[in-house]
Image 1: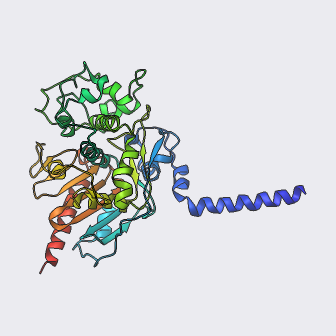
Image 2: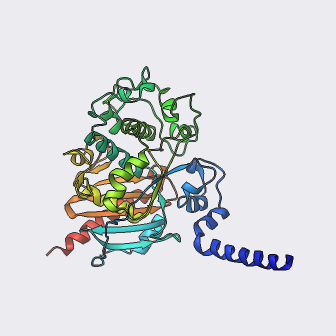
Length: 398
């Protein structure tokens, strides 16, 4: 009897081992390169390769909340293959890219994957999530949860009263012109962006609010643009509090289900339970592309108007000068003067949207540096690739 039981256990162990190798290669890769630090900015390239496809499964990070998809999937039929005019494989290698999906006129014109990633996997968004969060502010206005983006932030987050945010509007948070001091240096372990996610919250206060309300003002609200991930986290707390539901649930309800995303996504949570809304949605690259199509469709999902009239135009056009020729910043969207706009995150995450050409380019990757400011050229090279795609589409026009 004992020998029989041992034989059964051995067969089960072999079967489980085979399942581990074939069905969850992401976790196998992760086990070989398990990060020990919660700060992704200082992981090795190998740890990022493993971790970016599995952030919501890392035991060292906080929990995540599911963004549920529905059963009615928005179709992405194949279109005529696009001749970009450059070596796409070489471009993906130089970008250390995990995925590239080009959709034009609602059809997939090009789709490639790398780093042993594929269409069934979920890759983290980093700051692409900022554009999701600002879109939920628009939804909350449409639903009547927020009266106006000219309301004071502290009216919706009372724990900010008495801080430097007391005279800051929602609009100024959306455009990152609060005037509150902040350091977004990804290479500096003492910068605000490196420290605030490990902050210990004051009792009864959201962790982001607890950190942000201690910061000093450095300029009058509305007069100075500084990129601040922490403020997008505040926007998420505000939108979630106004709608009285978690952001992941609200995103599922307003967009993910009714527009027809194919897969469930996840959103990482901070230590006090709010989504980390300046970061960390994990989704399939095709569903990132579908989010771009939602924007191109005018913010309509399931036949319902999700966003107020004029919201997309305001959110995706230059609201503030950022000191770069041909570019600006809207409501948590990077804007280009030709009418295109971008959701983008560190290490190569992006959704490029061009209304003129009905074009969406979704990409994920693991750049050697977080941004070009650390000495790389990946961001500049990617923008040049976007321009090459635009030219290729224009060349097809009779």
